[in-house]
Length: 76
Length: 272
Image 1 (cartoon, rainbow over the protein chains, first blue to last red):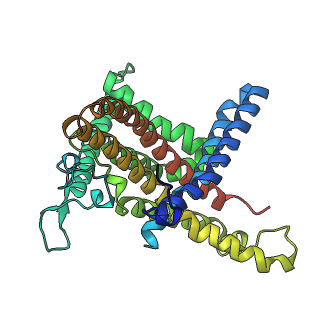
Image 2 (image 1 turned 180 degrees about the vertical axis):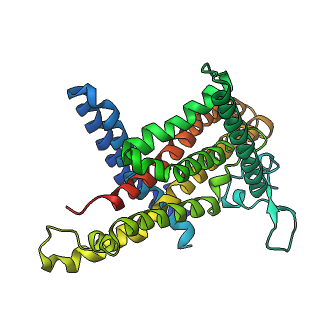
Image 3 (image 1 turned 30 degrees about the horizontal axis):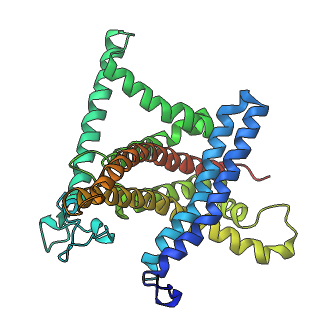
């Protein structure tokens, strides 16, 4: 089997960029949801309010990943 | 639809979907500023449908009030539930009764417009979301942006900008750092992320669906031998992602409306 020379791999560097951009928001969304589950387990009667806040938190965090998806088109 | 079946390039290899999915050929009024392509046509159809549905709903509601008929039919109940969702669980919950009613028309418009435009992404023969090109998200984000600035200006006058840019309880020396960050996040990043979040969710969703179904087509009709079996897998993934897109469509409509409401609420809040 031929050894793959990394320098010769072809493709778009933007793909790697998006992969990097997705790491942070992935961890972030996970944290937001896990904390919400924890809080609901502690205080089930607040579930409705906590869920609204959870969606807000997810929306803000996820925006970073989506900006990462948009940048290759902008800085083409 | 034609794009969906162009999964194979001339030399018989698989051709993945690209950004050109979102530039379909123009079908009418070519060369004028009013050129209409497939996406624009879908948007116009959705707008017409929304107007007709809302007209039918309001007619039903008025009839029910006039005749004193308190038992709603199936169609009327759907309308009441959908409108009450925006009114009760978004507007009243975040803004309170009084301010909620003030901004309800805008919030309802945003919710149903985003929802309707998103859903065309998974409706067969439409197959592309009206919000997957920047126009609609941009207009809606601009509407949200000007509304929360208007709400703040109306309530606090110039104090709104003072509250937003110079938050209280911060030592004066820190304003050198805090003010630019606050300006960036409140007046630039808010509308940009509102528009980009909706747009990019729809773009990514559409590309995923096209990838799944064009790969299925490629595996079934062009690939040979064992590879034909992969087609079943990609087809299954395609259906799974269609359901996922349904969830994303509703969620994005909810999130867009909720964020608009929260921005208005933050603008209306009294200084601490």
